[in-house]
Amino acid sequence: MKTSTFNHWEKKIQQAIALSHDDPQGDRGLKEVAALISESVGNFSHKFVEMYGMSYIHFTKLRRLEAGAGYLRHSDYSVGMISELCGYTQSSFTKAFREFFDEAPISFRNRLYLINEKNTLARTKIASTPHDDPQHVIFTPDRTEDIKLLDYQLYYNILPRTGDPVKTMVDYLGIYQKQLYAIKTSLELPGAMIITGTLDIVPVTDYSRMLMYVGIMIPLQNEYDKAHNQVRSSFQEPFSLFTKRVPAGNYKKLPVPMSFAAAGLPMYEFINNSCRAGYFKMSGNHFFISLTGENESEIYIPWQKR
Image (cartoon, rainbow, N blue to C red):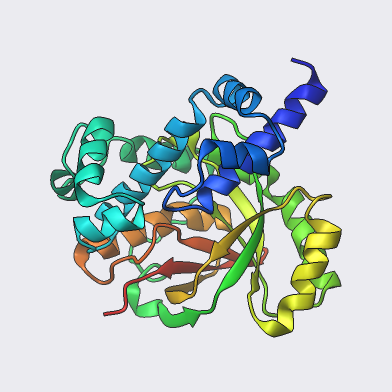
């Protein structure tokens, strides 16, 4: 495949993946997604399989079931509610979940470790420079602040897809981060955040398939309407930015004196241990890191406020 052809289709497939991730219940069908990326159904289907290793229909189904597995892992939502969040009836979710994970949702919920978890943690440790906090002085529930975030629009880049997503993040994040800081500075957006995370479900998604992103999150409030219009008209296409709605909700905010590369692994271990111990439960699957300085970050964890 020519380089120009590969680049064209890589962008189109990333666009389709972004559309799927902004559609948690799987309401968009194959024809609609192909139309939205301005490609024929046949060409799109063929290229997605060729470049991603599975059909788009299989990808969207797996994404929704992995989201369900994440809810089972870190929330205390009922199986019925999780089914609805993922666009299923409870019976269809249970059937599909058994087919993909060879296990019923209830027994999956009771697992201490998941199949991909040890590999993900080990690979992340090798690819990053995790901070050691053996006394839990930094990563402790006592240091979290309970806050409420309003609705945001996330404009983001998917980082290049390789077999080692965390290493790719470490290698490439600075390039995209500079572009996003340029947007924030030029548009004078004090309420915006530069964030990074994964589109997928840690630790459910296989490590090699995880897609990392970096983006700018801008409030969906009237005073930011001009900024959103400027991002869409001046930056979205040149910077290849995708969009995702981040709904309002309750978050645990944890400031940490370290970079994203140092915070990533202990952040996950802190979240997983806190959910297991019952300090809090998550209302969504996607925690993220706000990049506030060279050696400082803020972790945001969506939580179920009871």
